[in-house]
Length: 239
Image (cartoon, rainbow, N blue to C red; front, side, top):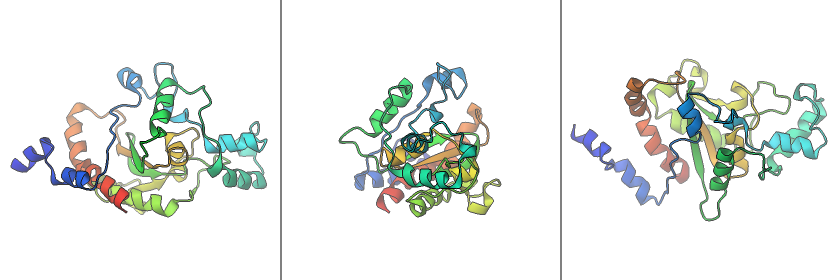
């Protein structure tokens, strides 16, 4: 149809609206190209890049002298101290990060290119995931960041524009959104690092139950997320 031709040609009015709002979009087709080519989540060196970022809880544990204590054995005062210290932890590079991780960190913190918001597109579920991703004791529970209300709003703003996400059976109680730690806790993820070190409201958008969706499924995925991908940046940046 003519409308589809306009969209395919980049003349969708929502694209023009982004330009009118002076919103700059940075697109990265693949953060782990070797893993994509190898059909696995780890990079060529066998490292899971989404566990390779400086973690606020790990860094805070080092400062508080708790680095050697297994998370599950932390006493209640230590759990509270870690939670309080994590938001101000030093998240500068350690020098041990993988090249892909180091490149992403440099990109997100480069002078002159401030990121207000970000979204990492994943597969394996259908949900908009937001910080925190970890808890001090690595327990599965809701872990609210200092900007929890804003993150919940941003996640809802995306999910509401994706028909399959807002009706996700697994996350029906929260209309297609979840706090990361309430779903499953992790350390070293990009999401928490980007929020604290990069200053970006970053969501992890899980777009497909299939971890490796077949090519035939891609048009449907694109259609299901087209409105959300175009309208979410303006909604989040514009408030």
